[in-house]
Image (cartoon, rainbow, N blue to C red; front, side, top):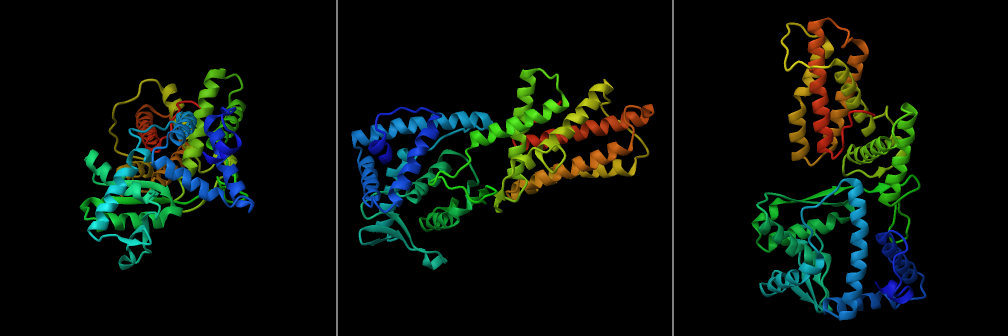
Length: 398
């Protein structure tokens, strides 16, 4: 806001609106870090103080730039197939967080240190945490204290899961400790799902420095790669269908690649690797689903159930793998690890493709054909269910 006001005042976005605002984030970081503008940090802090005081000019600018940001975000969320049931805005809750802190100060849960209010946490093995600055302004943790309480009040939940990068591990350790010190029994149901950073091959992305790959550009790159791969296989495909499939495959590639690795680990993201139809990728799972769908379409009417006395060894392996699916889901949920589902789906696809390479399905004798078609329909259903849990579409054709 300060950078926009100083160097670009009254200009309107000339690109995707959240990108436009992001440029001022970078501009401020560069100007404040060049050693020639030491006053900028103080000016930004004063702007925050004015915002919390309800200054009309500052609030009006905040509303305008906020609208630009959220309009841009919504475009990206739509591309990703992401939606939210509810938004909580810091601007709506910071005052309530301050009230809780003031009450905690009276009860001597917090202490005053040179005008700032501090939570003592050394007794639980953590550094003390400032919860209100000496100038009276709030911090993220001030708002998080109230927000945690509000979510448990508004919804009949057992757990509140914070999906935030590993750089904030200490923040959430301190937050949960403070919530317990405030006497909230539900604090035990708060969990930080910490995840590692997504790195470029050349290193870490930094939004302050502008060295980021934004989601929109990355998605478009993946859509192009998927489009090229699908076009090679189906050169006469209708453009509308080609575009739809390329988006299904591109999104599947991105989501699966990010989810297949244990969340706590950093990821070096390679788009070309993630789009491969034959590697341990989302498109490989999607392609296997489409392959089975093609076989079943050719077969026509499918048996509802079958009864046989003898199975092939690989059929027994596939049945055993299918039987594991409910347990895998339960383990993935209880351990907060979608990577378990990714690994399961890869193993199922590898088993199926090995099996299909060795046996006849459509040309098998009638009873055996029925068994194999029924088994394939079960595999397809589990692949579809598994991909759905990961937020990935299961196309019937690739």
